[in-house]
Length: 302
Image 1: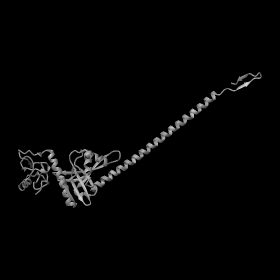
Image 2 (image 1 turned 45 degrees about the vertical axis):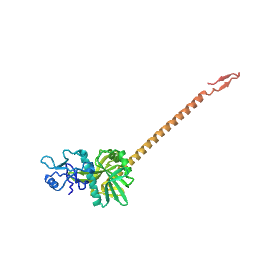
Image 3 (image 1 turned 90 degrees about the vertical axis):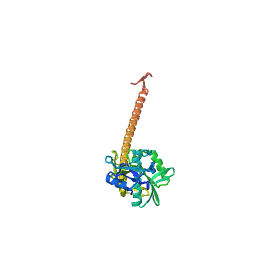
């Protein structure tokens, strides 16, 4: 039986080598789990595929471990946990899409030179969902989106962390970005959206999300009331920003018009002053009138 509960080290049952199995913290539950199952390192995630020891002691919480001489690449590192968590999210999405939504779904589907995490087929559309937990640049995300778009009608990213560059870029450019939450101990499986809100000057972000059952998949990708709320908030903020830009443009136009009017008035005053100066100068340069005396001599009139 496959178990997915709180874990210290999530492992896989060799019968499928696809579904994560978690070691429960409760020792009695762990003993019952150990009695009826055998556990193996996932070759699907780059492990050696060898059998693992299910350790249930009095000090450490129940956990899985490799044999002493094992040279497996997945020896309890943070990368190991990330790989299993990534797979667990994929499996949760697969179960939800097939069971609840009734759509066809496959994992790790090859598209050209890439491999998409989740490909949903709901005739007449296909949607690719990418679960991202590790660092990824916006440029690389764009390249992968372009690649997967050769087959899928819509490509959407589900970011597990906020420090991923591709997430920051999408949030800045689009105004919202989809998130995925997964908790081993709480069995948390949620999809949400982080979006920009507040007025057009002071930007803030909010998270809105819920269980997988809050969501549905259409030709344009994931949809829910959470995403609708985010889009409305982003639209409202953009309307405010556009209004502010129009007001600023109008105010700038008024300032330019006033400046141009002042400059035109200054040019007219300068022209008037120049004309007045020339008139005065012409008067000053005019010859003095003369008068003749009875003797015929000319005298200037002052």
